[in-house]
Image (cartoon, rainbow, N blue to C red; front, side, top):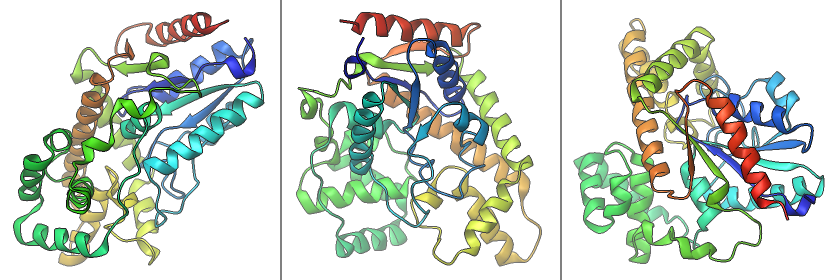
Length: 329
């Protein structure tokens, strides 16, 4: 198979499902025939200084297999699905030109969907509209605005938590500016002809049969984050005046809860409520995983791998090999 004929392989899954380990195993299995380069599909890994709370691949893992779209923005710098599509499309071409296989790995399902299905150009942010939405949220609360969104864009509202202020705000903003629901910009017809070979047929999804298995891994990961200095990482981020709680980067799961816990500690002058932080952080991460799985179930052509079953990595390697053989001219 020529470099330009290599398909894109993608490994998606909810947080803590084993995507990084699976990607490294696939890269090792393919090394004899195809060098592999990983393109991160994660809206949190793009940010510098956010390493522990994002479970960023270690320096050793990144040295073993080249990784892209990690540490490309400061936390206060914007990054979007449209920017991801532009960067990923360029990288896919460059990786193929080097004779390597592009392996897209991550859990930001909007990025996967945007790359596979495409996105219509969406309205630019309008500060006045956004300020009006924020004022309503302050008076009524974000769950009330989530209910408002459900009236005009039930598809988007169904995949958002009632407290997901960032995404509720953007969806309402798009509606108020364009008169169209945000979900109207995310339709499969946008990429009917895909010259880059990015297709749902190459998407492998790590999903557990038993949700309790994933919940256990989420709790263990959050505990490991705390043990390895996650709070100190958030304190360093807070010390930079360019960072604040309303940034998309600081709204990432775990970071938002840690920031709030540190705010509460500063306000009452007492000890940090570590047990409360742990409980809220794990609960928020479980909700994120639930939303990720919901997104994946909507991607009908994905190939599901039961990540909680024995031999899951071997099953993933074999499935990827089969896809490469199928795509061979």
